[in-house]
Image (cartoon, one colour):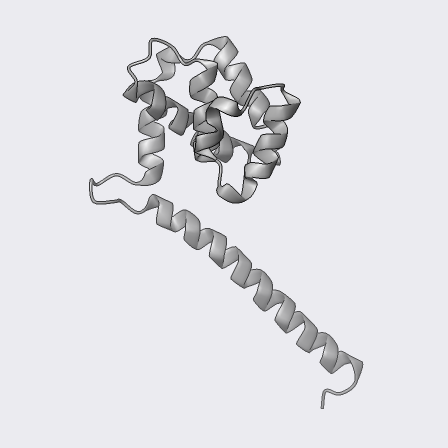
Length: 141
């Protein structure tokens, strides 16, 4: 029979492992939903990749450097995903406006739109630290 501290140890680990599996499953399910095709036959990830590939010739060294600087607060593990998402939004904005190159304005607008609302306080902090005036972009927050 199990009794005493060992029983409580087993019960504790059952809840810990159940919680960890639930958290991992939640994030895997979110990623799975992004890969599912929408009504047009392409997934969100397909569209991001499409916009980035269509705009590769528009990205200059200064634009790439600004994008890299903006994603520095993101943990290293998630930085490539965040960079891809922001670059896709920036590229979409630039292509819709028929821009000849990607400018700082496109990057900042794409950065704001691609960032989840819950992270906007960190976004504002980063833009302030870079001394970027947020007044023209307040309507996007």
